[in-house]
Length: 164
Length: 164
Image (tube, rainbow over all chains, first blue to last red; front, side, top):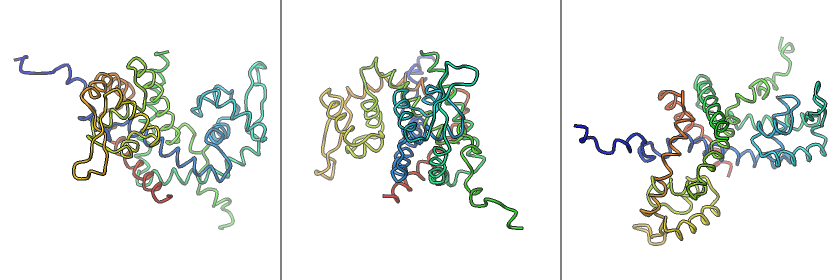
């Protein structure tokens, strides 16, 4: 009777066709990320900001003082991009460097009042885009979505860590 | 009594601090997209594939014949990147160009048997990554997630369309 089941091995990995390309969650997440980022980039132009600058300011405005590495991780940019971005932001007077309390060897970045003001002028537009993109997704659904996304990110980070 | 309510305007836009940066869904989506894409890129190396090539093959393997524009949209790449990618895939014999049935002026791309075989060799690894990243997210939660993501993408596409 086992011979009546063809392709048992192949069946354990459903085809992308069977899953449906447009229902494949990573595909949706990539599309949303790209479309959202494109729209944010357009909005940033009138604020004389770039995406790395805005992300660095957003992270520093909410997370306190951080090292370049911590910032690059949270802002999702290569360390080299983040370094250049922070140099530019420092020249503009939007961030300042300081030594970490308790460990003089560690240099951290902190947002200045001027930097915070720049982010706060942009934030209502970013929040408006967020509200528009989640229109019709009820609070309970948003919470479930955020919980699932946290789980997915944890899984990916753990996998990336194990892989090297 | 109305005077007792300070900052009513500011209160209608909660701060990013109040929302929590790491619970802000666009932040999570960008982080997942970047981390996932980095891991896919690493996996592609041993298959002698790039991300644009793999995405083009994935889309063509599931959606039939498409124009360059349709492919660029679905694969989330600029049209110029997609054009170069398709030229390379054509040279490798993985896609072929043909005229659309019923409209001789429209040129479409179609995946070849060799191209399909390349994608099918890679697919189990991509599916494995998908299963790993969604470990612990139950089928019902996945369906809810995909439904919410579709809604978000529709909202973004509509907004992008209206904005220009």
